[in-house]
Amino acid sequence: MIPQFACVARWLEGHRVSLVVCPPDEREETCPFSEEASLAAMMQGHRKREFLTGRRAAREALVLSGGQACAIPQGTRGEPLWPTGFTGSITHTKGLVAAGCLRADGLPVAANESRRAEAVPQKTVLAVGIDLERAGRVLSEAAWQHILSAADLRMHAAVADPGLRLVLFSAKESLYKAVYPLCGEFFGFDDASLVWPGPGGMPGVPAGCPGSGVARLVIRRTLGLGAQGRLVFHAGQEFVCHWQFDGDWLLTAVVVEGNRVLVPGQ
Image 1 (tube, rainbow, N blue to C red):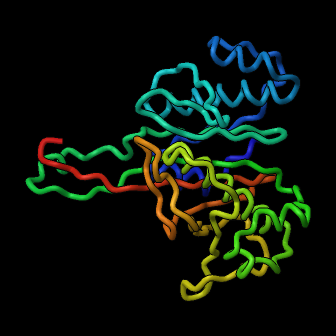
Image 2: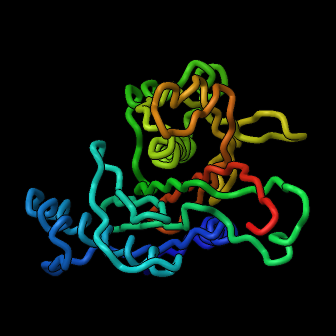
């Protein structure tokens, strides 16, 4: 059965993100777009199937978001290059592929808001990042130590639950996928930390790994300085991550929100 990740999907839908989840196509899939076909030609076996299925899922999500089916090539760091006006994220692991897409200009403006006489700040979704992992994956101790930032070491070094460890790893993967296309600057696991909300809103660590949940991710250094035309994310900036285990898989998702100004007639 294909997992639905209902909790995460509802949250993404509330941010106008279309989510498509599907298994890799075991058939020899034909790509209708030369840009993608040339990339796939350099791949073999399951990697090729996952890539082509990922692009097909991305096109489905793109159409659901109001776009036209088209090629989605690859950037220098492997990031998908979406058509103008849209953005999104693609992820795959053994046996499953997912893609999320949204309009790059964020949430639509209601008709009554466009008639306001004064400028009004409006939240908009700028980007989304998603990551899939096999729920049974167990990080080695070396990998666990590698993904911890200095703040994580203080809060999470003693975490032994493999599910919680996997959530932290996957959440940071989702954060990178959401933020990198906007700031244009590579950053590592040690540049972000994860905070689980505890009682009374204080930081805490769950006693066991729940089936789904919410956490905060915090950027630990400023990103995007000096990159022309890129956004700047400042040290201490926070992002919300939702995660869910569904059957044999874990899905994490991060959205980047920002403010734009509505002016009369916009």
